[in-house]
Length: 120
Image (tube, rainbow, N blue to C red; front, side, top):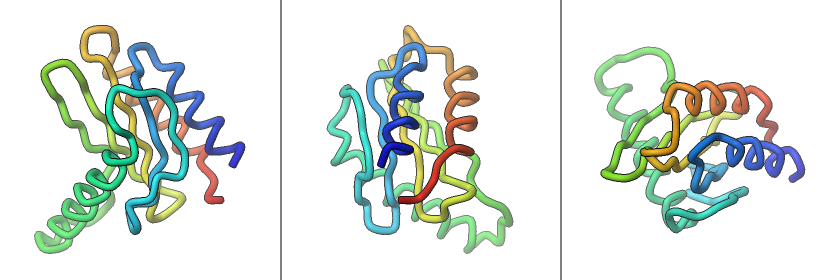
């Protein structure tokens, strides 16, 4: 579990981070989380459906490759969903304050941390 805690700590070090999670999208189960800003358990379940729907749509359209990340922009927040390349079935979720965060740096940090993610 310490690897997951290291990843969430790294995500929370991103400027403007409000909350984060590591999620098993096959079950919608929250594996690790930190912070607030949204109900992370509910977000884990809901965003699992988003990832599964996008993968299904890509398959139906014959689009090869995987999802790098999914960005959801709201009035005051940006949400990053980054499926794991090395751990099929997992994704990293990061909630950012739109005014105090830098999206490019947050995406870069999320990508870097994803490479360190180890399945428990």
